[in-house]
Image (cartoon, rainbow, N blue to C red; front, side, top):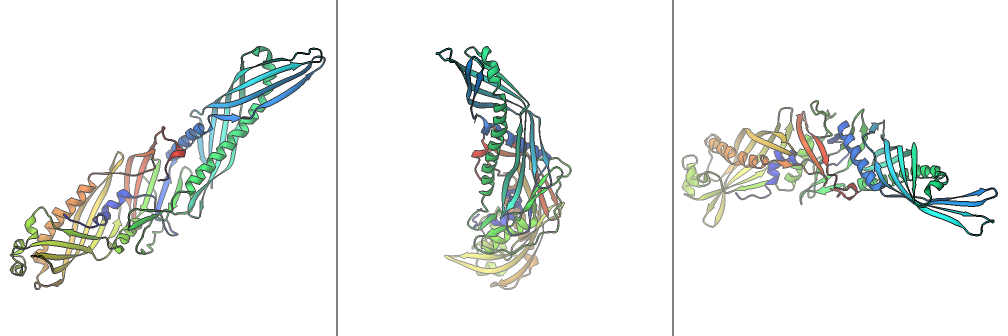
Length: 490
């Protein structure tokens, strides 16, 4: 079966399977909602990445001098102070405010290593006495809290850590080497310095890491080309909306054409976001205008064209098979092969309801006869097809099925005389049911793994349709071996 740009014809019911966070214009046609389980997942991922970015962490050293009456001076110093291990545990929460989210991790323990040195000098003793060694520090009861704002900045997401604090409850310093038991009291004098250093450096590094994540978010592409015909404009609309236990991101969601301007489709007044009572990490809601804008882009680019030269019953593509249906066709071109040249006359229109996804397709079917070395167009039939399908999911794949509802025929022009459409209606029905529908279902039935950022995987996808909306509810897994900072933009 020869075909040119067949993908646009599949888009009528295939496109929901490729749906992604796309955007254009000033109104939202797509919404992504991160629920409480999704926020908890994001919190755990970010905390895990923060721990990896904070270890090892070098803290500033310090030196203290003491004067002891009648004895002389004592100098003590700590250096090479390195925080090399953090254990956050499970005692962490994420809270949502009106315009920000707060992540609080409590009960953190940390391990710090350092070097210490001690020297004693006196006018009475010309020889300086010194000693040195290492120490291990156990930090207990540490709590870190960060307040982050996510704003819309010129169509991109801007992340800003407005507040970040750290408090340490207990420090236990254990000295090793030299006469460490003798100097323990002096080294304990550095406890306040180490505590203050931890409480200062950790927030500074977290804010620095947040700046890197902000740069990553603002570096997300505004437009992603699918091919040489269509592109996704990924502009965010408005600031995120904070609920009691979820955050909603609104995206315009229309496809744009690289060769022709598409219409400004209007969004329905209000999105109703629900996973049917299920608690999922992510809810992606797509307005039907997202799909219609893609179909319109392909149509205006002239890509909706299909040439059919092979069918299961090849006699349908020979004039002999039409001998008793359109006699004049056979008389003028006896036993000649034919091809069906199908082109859309308008952009297919999708309609989404709670029961199904429907589509109306208007096309012209030109019958071309292969007469000798010539291709002779002999008739043009206008075809209006009504089809519907459903989208289902299993595991991390999304599947679809499509079926023919009804169709109508009318003769636009003919070089083989007028003939009633009722004569060919049965043949066209066979063609639609045995060629078009099986071809679509063979692709839809294989299933599609929805593309996500490398390192993340969608699982337990659940599909819900409602009036003018298609929603994908899913949980997310993250490969711990992947580093968040190293993830590609797409």
